[in-house]
Length: 303
Image (cartoon, rainbow, N blue to C red; front, side):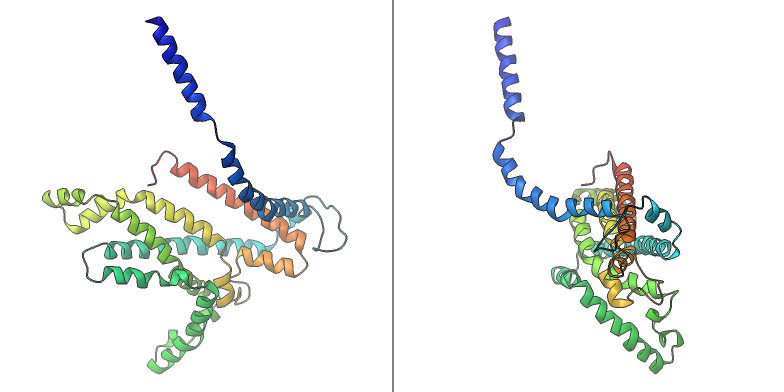
């Protein structure tokens, strides 16, 4: 009995060791991607962080100035305004995109006619370039809507939203949401289709109406997909650039200038080291947000 047990135990150990061993060929497949990622992202990032502690303008001589750039950023009203706009815009857009996409997903997964064709139509904005979308909506906001307002006698339509420093952000949210809804919609459709139909049948037998099924069954069961869309959307909107460029170019004034626009404008304007410090701070903020989101979703089954 003891001899048999010893043989089985040794066999289990050998099997575990062989299962843990990774074939070298897998590392060979990983090497090109790792090399490209290091050369294209990691190495330039490390170099940029290094130059954030200097007075470099991007070319020519430079010298170390310590934390001077970082201290100056926290007292720069233009930079602080860009952070305020970026986070406010991101939060507002995440809310709009998720509400609209979820309602559309519920409609497109219900028993309606032509839902396959409608799904195709609704995902079209996802494949169009953001800058093209921005220029089209720029024309609509600047010409078509004011002309329609003048023709119909609606005063608030006669002035372009893009010319109002207090309302221009609304136009940016609308256009960004118009492009972002399709991707979010597809994730919600996948989530809704994964809910077993038997759950709804049981709820109907118990007397639950459609509204009760939506609030008490659908929403809780797709909560993981909501978390995924919020995380992906918020991270994407923090880097907003092309749509803002095409709509307002950061104006009127600097009221709609995002952090990404501020950094790139600084690179072009000779503030290389200063904006590299800004980019480093923005990177740290993004990492902290990611860690916060991971801590909030830890222990939950997103899918």
